[in-house]
Length: 318
Image (cartoon, rainbow, N blue to C red; front, top):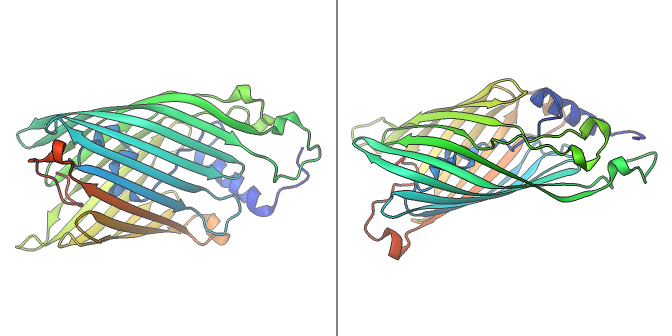
């Protein structure tokens, strides 16, 4: 089969085994800036920004590491019917080694206004598209059908979530992918022929705590707990300081492999730019230069839809 793998490719494969416990779990990308874009985790987040909110993200994980993950992500969502419902869209392209995976999902949230906040119940549905190209591998038999390229294998999936939020607090729980779709019919090499979509569980929450009388500086602590079938439970602990809703500076601890620093700038009334850097703490740090993630968010009122509604600021929950 293989003549040889380069050392870095072997290290990457070993790390994936450690993170998943098995190659039967297809990985959904781990993002660092879900703090600013909860639609990544939870379809019930759709419409929480009230106005139309669109974000473009790029994540370059484990820089200088051969075959490392690179992800492009786009999302957009808005509220409708005087904040009674939300609609959202997410599209991402994730590439790792010889494999690439695209996700296209639409989301719907039913929003209930409560005396002290809002409760949203959401669903999402869409497609995962798996492709594989082994042309860069060194094979003893280039004609081995186990390593035939795969293009555009489609698998439908759906998920659900709940999200509660007010001006000082938010909490959510979601299972964005409920189906354990398999790819065994692709006849890939034996150790990879049972790749499956993993079922994820996300539980997260956060606070907005004023630090001065004028409420121009806020502390924003939050936590995210991730559960995945076939993998150990892991979590992020995040803390940031928000200045005048213009600048947000924070740090996160991810127990599986990173300490993260992040910053967000208000560029204009419509645009925010965010950047984060993951300081890798696992053994993979010996062969990589950390992880970069960038995000640009654009928000705008649609005159015929959001004319008289109150929209939250970028860092507010509502």
